[in-house]
Image (cartoon, rainbow, N blue to C red; front, side, top):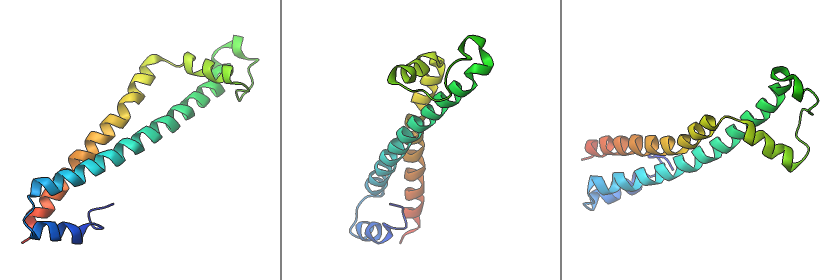
Length: 120
Protein backbone atom coordinates (compact mmCIF):
# COMPACT_ATOMS: atom_id res chain seq x y z
CA UNK A 1 0.00 0.00 0.00
CA UNK A 2 1.13 3.47 -0.67
CA UNK A 3 1.60 6.22 1.83
CA UNK A 4 -1.53 7.92 0.54
CA UNK A 5 -3.63 4.81 1.17
CA UNK A 6 -2.46 4.66 4.79
CA UNK A 7 -2.64 8.38 5.40
CA UNK A 8 -5.56 8.31 7.82
CA UNK A 9 -4.10 5.42 9.84
CA UNK A 10 -0.74 7.18 10.08
CA UNK A 11 -2.41 10.42 11.18
CA UNK A 12 -4.29 8.56 13.94
CA UNK A 13 -1.14 6.78 15.15
CA UNK A 14 0.76 10.04 15.09
CA UNK A 15 -2.05 11.74 16.97
CA UNK A 16 -1.95 9.07 19.69
CA UNK A 17 1.73 9.81 20.20
CA UNK A 18 3.45 7.02 18.27
CA UNK A 19 7.04 7.91 17.55
CA UNK A 20 7.89 8.88 14.00
CA UNK A 21 10.63 6.25 13.88
CA UNK A 22 8.15 3.46 14.71
CA UNK A 23 5.70 4.50 12.02
CA UNK A 24 8.44 5.00 9.43
CA UNK A 25 10.12 1.70 10.27
CA UNK A 26 6.89 -0.30 9.91
CA UNK A 27 6.10 1.18 6.53
CA UNK A 28 9.72 0.86 5.38
CA UNK A 29 9.85 -2.85 6.26
CA UNK A 30 6.62 -3.44 4.34
CA UNK A 31 8.08 -1.60 1.38
CA UNK A 32 11.31 -3.62 1.62
CA UNK A 33 9.35 -6.90 1.64
CA UNK A 34 7.40 -5.84 -1.45
CA UNK A 35 10.64 -4.74 -3.12
CA UNK A 36 12.29 -8.08 -2.35
CA UNK A 37 9.33 -10.04 -3.74
CA UNK A 38 9.26 -7.92 -6.88
CA UNK A 39 13.03 -8.16 -7.25
CA UNK A 40 12.94 -11.96 -7.01
CA UNK A 41 10.12 -12.22 -9.55
CA UNK A 42 11.87 -9.81 -11.91
CA UNK A 43 15.16 -11.65 -11.55
CA UNK A 44 13.60 -15.01 -12.34
CA UNK A 45 11.78 -13.66 -15.38
CA UNK A 46 14.81 -11.67 -16.54
CA UNK A 47 17.11 -14.67 -16.09
CA UNK A 48 14.79 -16.89 -18.10
CA UNK A 49 14.61 -14.26 -20.83
CA UNK A 50 18.40 -14.01 -20.96
CA UNK A 51 18.70 -17.80 -21.13
CA UNK A 52 16.27 -18.00 -24.05
CA UNK A 53 18.00 -15.14 -25.87
CA UNK A 54 21.34 -16.85 -25.34
CA UNK A 55 19.89 -20.02 -26.85
CA UNK A 56 18.56 -18.09 -29.85
CA UNK A 57 21.88 -16.40 -30.68
CA UNK A 58 24.02 -19.48 -29.98
CA UNK A 59 23.83 -20.81 -33.58
CA UNK A 60 25.25 -17.51 -34.84
CA UNK A 61 28.19 -17.64 -32.43
CA UNK A 62 29.17 -21.30 -32.65
CA UNK A 63 28.97 -23.40 -35.79
CA UNK A 64 28.91 -26.64 -33.79
CA UNK A 65 25.57 -25.77 -32.25
CA UNK A 66 23.97 -24.84 -35.58
CA UNK A 67 21.81 -27.95 -35.43
CA UNK A 68 20.10 -26.95 -32.17
CA UNK A 69 16.40 -26.21 -32.21
CA UNK A 70 15.38 -22.67 -31.43
CA UNK A 71 13.35 -23.69 -28.38
CA UNK A 72 14.57 -26.29 -25.87
CA UNK A 73 12.47 -29.45 -26.05
CA UNK A 74 13.41 -31.22 -22.84
CA UNK A 75 14.47 -30.51 -19.29
CA UNK A 76 18.03 -31.54 -20.14
CA UNK A 77 18.23 -28.88 -22.84
CA UNK A 78 16.89 -26.25 -20.42
CA UNK A 79 19.51 -27.20 -17.85
CA UNK A 80 22.19 -27.06 -20.53
CA UNK A 81 21.22 -23.45 -21.22
CA UNK A 82 21.73 -22.52 -17.57
CA UNK A 83 25.15 -24.19 -17.41
CA UNK A 84 26.34 -22.39 -20.57
CA UNK A 85 25.65 -18.90 -19.20
CA UNK A 86 28.53 -17.08 -17.48
CA UNK A 87 28.68 -17.36 -13.68
CA UNK A 88 29.19 -13.61 -13.34
CA UNK A 89 25.72 -13.12 -14.80
CA UNK A 90 24.17 -15.26 -12.07
CA UNK A 91 26.07 -13.38 -9.37
CA UNK A 92 24.88 -10.07 -10.77
CA UNK A 93 21.29 -11.27 -11.02
CA UNK A 94 21.39 -12.54 -7.43
CA UNK A 95 22.23 -9.02 -6.22
CA UNK A 96 19.20 -7.41 -7.86
CA UNK A 97 16.51 -8.41 -5.29
CA UNK A 98 18.70 -7.36 -2.37
CA UNK A 99 19.49 -3.99 -3.93
CA UNK A 100 15.83 -3.36 -4.77
CA UNK A 101 14.84 -4.22 -1.21
CA UNK A 102 17.45 -1.90 0.32
CA UNK A 103 16.46 0.91 -2.03
CA UNK A 104 12.76 0.43 -1.23
CA UNK A 105 13.46 0.50 2.51
CA UNK A 106 15.60 3.64 2.28
CA UNK A 107 13.19 5.59 0.10
CA UNK A 108 10.16 4.63 2.18
CA UNK A 109 11.92 5.50 5.44
CA UNK A 110 13.00 8.93 4.16
CA UNK A 111 9.64 9.71 2.59
CA UNK A 112 7.61 8.79 5.66
CA UNK A 113 9.91 10.69 8.00
CA UNK A 114 9.68 13.82 5.84
CA UNK A 115 5.91 13.51 5.64
CA UNK A 116 5.56 12.98 9.39
CA UNK A 117 7.63 16.08 10.14
CA UNK A 118 5.06 18.15 8.28
CA UNK A 119 2.17 16.87 10.38
CA UNK A 120 1.06 19.05 13.30
